[in-house]
Length: 148
Image 1 (cartoon, rainbow, N blue to C red):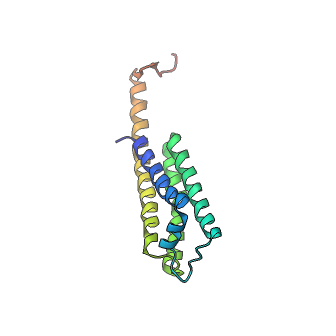
Image 2: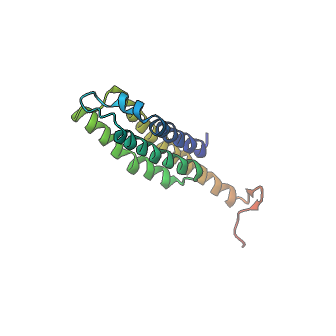
Image 3: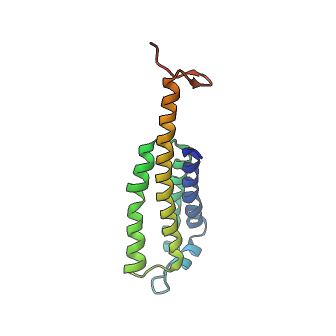
């Protein structure tokens, strides 16, 4: 497995869950918000859809970019960890979410796991690429060594 495959899988998490929010905001709201907090109007659907659009934008950027080891690490630790706090607070403390919101928690855990795995794979790939160049190897287009 290569880091780019992990990166594409990471994008898929955002595109899938974001698409669900964007295209079916009423269903998402009805499933994840407890009845006593449920609003179910055009404005609440707009907010859920906006959240989904942002997630899809993020997924598109992840899919079309090339992550470096640092990108995986920062994304996994700095970007995903606050969402665990969000899930914990509104699920366990405030009790606003139904058990369906645990899908978001699972998505966040997957993001963290994929990011850490992607980091590890990307570091290995970079080290292997450096070793190939140092031994005179190169790409199909020619060697990547600097002139001596």
